[in-house]
Image (cartoon, rainbow, N blue to C red):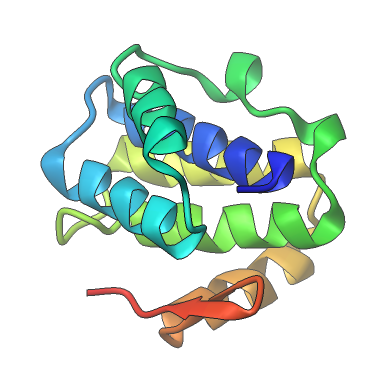
Length: 132
């Protein structure tokens, strides 16, 4: 995994904890990303251990370390993550709005990124991940 991919996964862990708990559907999405990013066994163990502790957007999203493409990928996957259990809670809607603000996207930019996420497949570098 690249450092950017690790930062995306760490940031998604913070999104998953938005409602105060990490649900199994959310954990499955994170595990899918680890596979999509070709994480080694050691990287997978490291990031799954990281996910066991509650995280927040303000403390755990390294915005300055993320490129524009990585921020877009993060937002698109965050949108999918907030629907992992079949519904988007009010807390998840709020955290997505806060993430958009933290990442510095305008409303129009965020809308375009989220529309792409709603369309289905998301690019992970040269690989693609289809949501279940």
